[in-house]
Image (cartoon, rainbow, N blue to C red):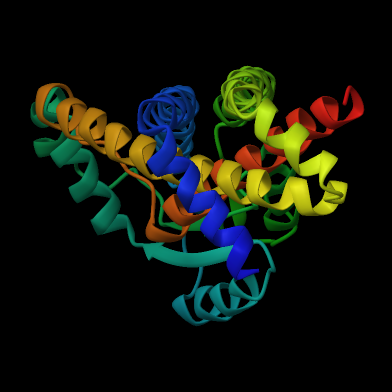
Length: 285
């Protein structure tokens, strides 16, 4: 194992220009893939912010005793889809209306009686904010005898579902395309390294080295270059993230675990590309 590591490290010293070129090429290939990852992360965050606004409003029949409402709140909170239930009294509903509908201030000031009903605002848990779950909860709420009306913006939630599905499909297709392009670029780069050492491989074969012995230094070399390229790509992505956050809007960046997985992904790609390139070369010797 020590010999394998020494041979892999020696390749950097023997051809530093080629090694730097390989790492840089891998870095820029993964940089493009990382940019797409950042777009996907921020799009998902934006959709999550929109999803948090999904709520169901249950308007109560006038004169419903507060004790009955309290029991109903406990029952509704036991629904597996429900995150929180908030009671809004008639007075609170009128205050909200006055604050939000400023153009109708004259109407509100001349009211002889509060026309707005009390209500329950039901927020759903993450993962249950799709149209199907909202409809199921609304149907159960309509079963309460004091429920005058139940609304949750069915059309708006269905549009959100379609947007989420489109984003997932486009993300999958484009992501696979970027991954394939990155793999091809990295494979070509590693193959250049292998070809530059073809004479060395031939000599090793002539003195009786096994295919496994010949492969190992190249595999380690490819994994190290892939990892270094992935780390460099993370730095480039961070620079792009800082530029966007300062010039356009506040964006989200990879978490530490996501950045680590990205570097590991680069190492795996480099390892796989080296395995394919060395395998093809050995088959022709």
